[in-house]
Figure (cartoon, rainbow, N blue to C red):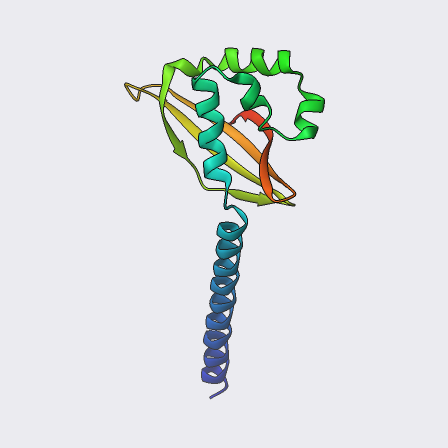
Length: 140
């Protein structure tokens, strides 16, 4: 009789734990979706600016702290090292929240889909709009 009681309590505890985990995951997902609004248009605008040759406009889409640490010249060198003209397709990964930042891995794919360039973009909310706070080659 005691074994059945322990088994029943264990099953209920396990179900309660799964329920709490599911609730936490749901709340986190909703929080991420709500807080991440505006990031996709920013990414699109960033790459459109670069593609049309308006690198200064793309540089201005970054945060003030980014511009303090990365000069315009270094930004140009970084973009040149990426050889972005080789890539045509963009695939977005799953965003991650760290403190008040959202980190998103974007994978640029070549037209023949043989070459892939993963980039980690870190976004920070400045007042009511998102800004790019960091761009780095992803370590996959």
